[in-house]
Length: 560
Figure 1: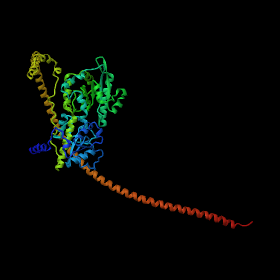
Figure 2 (figure 1 turned 60 degrees about the vertical axis):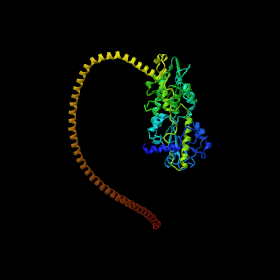
Figure 3 (figure 1 turned 90 degrees about the vertical axis):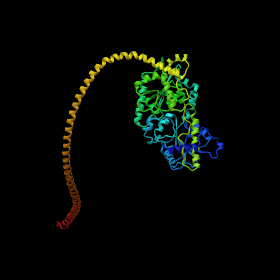
Figure 4 (figure 1 turned 90 degrees about the horizontal axis):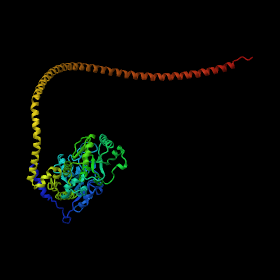
């Protein structure tokens, strides 16, 4: 950004007085108004966890009936919605952003998914944060903020999290530093029964071709599991399916095979999870369940996974790892979750602070009759550096013995790493000496092979030059023939034009002759009709003559 815009942003921050403390409603003479563009906001898990808390500080109006041509009430200071891809809401948001008379906050309702972002024919191009038609976006995690900032949303992304998952994040120890690392071991303990939960996104495909690919991958997985029932030790694994209805019908799953309970409960009762890219991946990671992403299409994953299945050949090995997960993979899954989802504190509280702050800033600008603007950052930074990052004792058990005998200081850990590297180097040294002798013997052979390759290359190069010369000669001949063909084609085109003119003249003569023929035919029909009339009169006269003659003969017949 330019220096002028930086100065403007600093002035904006000072003017807005952005703090992390929520205001006391009694101290404000004007309660900002927040309008929510979603008819079922109070029942939606996206809004319900925080809407009542926001109402303690600002006035909240759920705008249930709205149309494009119907203006939103002028009392509304801030519009909040997650619907930013339907025409109704898009038209309202676009008009609001152009008029700059109130704020707009768009909520992320889940993870970013590649096909939904770029290959969804039911969503208008550019409407999925490309860039967002909003002043601010409430993202679910730092990684999502970085992704959407790269799509033209710099200064708009506020890392909030998903308030509907606050109960799970707190329950599974993500808020408690003492219990945080310990949670990584929960997935390793298996009861008497082992359960695999297989899931899909609520809408795993957006076109018929995508549906064919999704059904094919689930059919392949289902067939593999029927032919190779997974086991843990001697126990057979129970498989539960929580997939879209079309997948369920395609696989002909029995009701007993399907998961229909509360999702959080089903995840907790499972030992491992397989899912297509969806927010469910994060929910399973919250519960410390080893989670694999089913991705036969090999599309980019905006939310990476510690385990991924991109072919049937990988299912068996991935299942073994899911039920016997390594500490390294679990560590990666946990670290990835921290990047993808704000989960170390209440997302609901951050949402309340963001909505209230934006409403107050917008109201203040409107009172001063200025265009509504917001600073680049409203919420405090998502800083989780103070949390324990790794369970080193579990990740690197070979360090355990030394750590028990030494004081755990930074220099000690660095020395341990150096010693480990030295031991590994010593192991590699004898192998390197053996390979050095082998390489010295192979060097001469490689030199001979290289000389032969050079000679072969030069021979091939000469052959290619001869071929190129031949091709150039042929090209010249073809160009000359092309010129000749062009002259002949022009002559033929001229002849064709003359023929077309003659054909047009003949067609005109034929049309005139046809008209004359029609007239002659009409005249002939008229004359034939006249002849028929005269013939009829002739027969009538002849009959009358015959009758009169008979009477005459009777009258002049001599009497006997």
